[in-house]
Structure formats: C-alpha cells, structure tokens
Length: 225
Length: 258
Ligand SMILES: Nc1ncnc2c1ncn2[C@@H]1O[C@H](COP(=O)(O)OP(=O)(O)O)[C@@H](O)[C@H]1O
Ligand SMILES: [Mg+2]
Image (cartoon, helix red, strand yellow):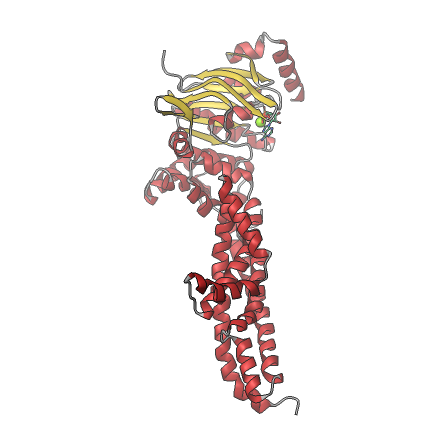
C-alpha cells in the first residue's frame, strides 16, 4: 500500500508537536534577524568609517557563506572557545545571523529611500540621532520594505529543516526519525511538505495584511497623497 | 553697537573645486529682517544651510548671538565644533524649507510637538498647548489633526512655520518658502511671515523671489552673485536705484518673468 491513512493518524500528533519547534525556531530566528538587520543597517550608515566598514564586512561575510556551515560552526566550533549552546539555540542564532544580514540590505534600501529633507528637518529641529531614527526615519523606512522582509521570513521558515543536521527535533528531524522507525517515509515526509506549503501561504497572506496595516497607520495615515 | 545676532566672518564654502561662497562677511542685527535675492546657483541656499548647520564650512567662523556656531573653544583656541556642541547651539535657529519637509506620518499637531517634547523636554500638555496656539496663529486651528497629505501646500508650509516656531528660535531662516506653491496660495504664507515680523522678536533671513514682499518687509536686501554679496542696502535703494549693473540686470529679468 502506497499511502496508509492509519499511519498518518498515528504520526500526526508527533508531527504537530514537532511543528511547534519549527515555528518557534522560525519566529525566534526571525526576531533576531529583524532586530540585528536593523542594527546592522544603521551601523552601515555611520559616518565613522571603521564602524560602517566593519558592519558591511560582517554582512558580506555572512552572506557569502552557506547557512549550514554557520549552523555547524556555532554548534561544533564555538564550544572549542568555551561557548557551549543547546542545539536549538545554536540553530536559532545561526538562522538569525544569516537572515539578519539579508534583512540589513532590505532595511538599508528602506532607509535610503526616506527623503533627505526628513533628515534635514530633524536636524533643524535639533532632534537627537536616536529620536530621529525612532520617530522620523524608521516609521517611514519600514512599511515599504515589509513585503521584502516577509519574503525572508518565509525563506527562513523553509530553511529550518537544516536544523535537523544538528539534531534539533523540528519537523524534518522528527519525520526522519519516524521514517526510520517504521520504514515508511512517504507519509511523514509528505505531511511535512504539506505543512510547509500551507504555512508559507498563511504567512504570505499575513504579511500582505500587515503591510496594508502599516501603510495605513505609520506611513501615510491621512490617506492617499 | 549691540552684538550682531548672526555674523559670518570670512566664511568660505566649497564643494571640491567649486567655491560656492567666497570669504563671506555678513552681520545681521537682532530683530533685523534680511532678504536674500540673486540668480539661481549664487549660493543663497548655502548661506542658510550653513547657518542651520546642515553644511560644514571650509573656512571662517559663523557666530550666533555672540557665540561661535561652527567652532568651539578648546584649550583657549577655536576648533571645529563637534556634534554635541552643535546640538547645544543650533537651538537658536529655526528653518523653513522650500518643500516643507513635514513629517508625513504625523498630524499637524504632532509635527509641532515632536521636538518641543524630545528636545526642550516639555510635557505632553505643555507641548500640546504650545502647538495649538501656534497652529491657531498660522490660521490652522481647525486643521490640527489633519495629516500633511490632507493639507494644501500653503497649509503645509504654515504648519512647517509653526513647527519651527515651537522651538522658540531667535533666528528664523526661510528658503524660498513660497516657490513650491501654487500662486493663489503664496499670499497666505506671506501673511503669516508678515505677522511673525511684527508680533515676534525674531531675526529673519529669507531667500525669496517675491520682490514685492522683500521690498515691503525687509530691512535690508542682499543681492548675491557668484558666491558673494554683490550689493546690499535698504530695499528702496536696491529696487529703485541699484548701483551694480548685475543687480539691475537680475531685477529686470525677474520683473520680466513676472
Ligand atoms: N551638495 C552639493 N554638492 C555640490 N555642489 C553643490 C551642492 N549644493 C550646492 N551646490 C552648488 O553650490 C552652488 C550654490 O548653490 P545654492 O546655494 O543652492 O544656490 P541658490 O540657492 O542661490 O540657487 C550651486 O552651483 C550648486 O550647484
Ligand atoms: Mg536655493
């Protein structure tokens, strides 16, 4: 029999539990990526040469190496330097760093698109750099880049199976274990694929809503210009 | 002789090889209204931007109310000012821009409250009162909660004037503040500036192409040409009897254009 419904019902609870881990890894990883990306983008705008160069170099380095190597590096090499992390933490940090670098480019585009006049008005009003970023620049820079950030959220989500390489009990790892116990891979792998498909579609719809909401409330609250 | 409110002392500004302002000397008395006129590219905007500390200067010193703006005292000598020092002294100056530069994501009120709260440390209540009073003064009492995109150009520019005034500057800079407006909206903005001139103790520098307004409003007119003040004097003198051929040519060209 190619497809066994009884087996499907049997493994569904286990897979659902694992999906919680996958979603946790996604959300935590993306939270890190979103914050780190913004910090990196702002550092890259620094007028102090070595700060912007260091930030740019970091971004370039992270983007030019595979995320799987970064995962292995944090999990297997960091302990050599006395930093021992649980697999889940190592995985989340690696995904966060990797996607943070991509997000920083997105933020940078958003920041550069804020008209120069907004900076000048902020200076003329003597706003501090912190307030300028927080109240003037970021609320205008982020709404237009939400779709691009959302794409990275979905991409990060779809890369969480890489964490199975360091034995995080997320969906993929769980499906592999189930498969090896029962010698049936069709159902667990198919279910996992289906889960990713559905969740990606849900996330994309959510991001569209969020984008519309941000556009209304943050960027252009008065309506069309 | 009182201390000038603004003093450019031998100020030079260049972009690479291009010298935009050449050894500028200019003193402006407290409460004086100075109109800056001149052809495009003559350095008018640059004068205001240097005073607003939006541009660094290459040489010379700018003083505001007797205090160096571009430089600070360090071990008994003047050295270029750092960001901290600039933040302290630039509070004396407010600027209104050609393209308003309002914060599009904030209502008219919020535009006028942002800096008083975060820079001057006003409470929300104080900032609200001050903003409301100023928006009333510029004739926008009924538009307080509107966003810039819901306002006409003239209204936006009046919000921008209120926003700058909320910081209680001693010097106000106006850079072609009516140039981006439809002709029928120019008057409402000029009226607000007129009221400022009579009701507030403000030193004003305005770059303008509104020769009629400059003639009636300014105490002094400076004609810029090629990064220098080619001629300056009382409006009557400059507009009816200029000494320089270049001034005459410029004025007739402007008048012809309408
Ligand atoms: N950021 C800049 N980089 C290079 N040149 C500039 C810059 N800003 C202004 N300039 C040049 O400086 C000159 C004076 O400009 P500006 O003060 O804006 O003139 P105005 O306001 O009288 O039209 C112009 O030749 C202009 O091209
Ligand atoms: Mg100009």
